[in-house]
Image 1 (cartoon, one colour):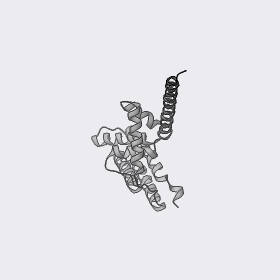
Image 2 (cartoon, one colour; image 1 turned 90 degrees about the vertical axis):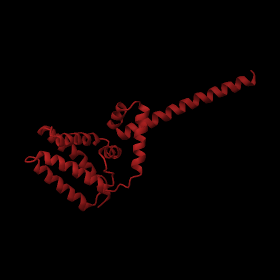
Image 3 (cartoon, one colour; image 1 turned 60 degrees about the horizontal axis):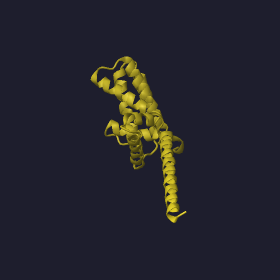
Image 4 (cartoon, helix red, strand yellow; image 1 turned 180 degrees about the vertical axis):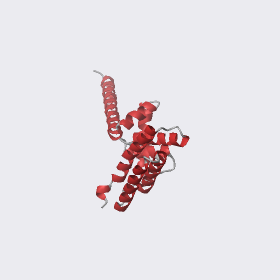
Length: 182
């Protein structure tokens, strides 16, 4: 065989190997994002124009998150916030709308003390999804009811669900890093 035939065969083999390697790398990155974000990965993919756009957004969240100076709560702060939460829950029966507003504010305070940006809800939920992908949807649900409460359209069952939703994120935020910070 002529030399040029061997060159063409070598080029084809290299191209095929590069395609296989790129495909494996892409699957590995996708699996890593899915493992890290869980249901949040699926939600992002369904909300985005394409899987690639959703994955880019999730990687951007990770990069933004890595730039944050997150810290666990001190033992005294954790105890103080847990006391506030207990008081909030006990007020729910008499003033459920106020309890939902207080839950939203308490979660924001914990996030601020932990080092999350708290300027707007979307920024908070995006970045908290990196550490707490399993409960970020609860946060979104609780906040949606908070908005309905402000508008005056939330019923008592909505309010109850909101407090339960906020509690899921609250507990994770308060506990996160607690074992390392005595």
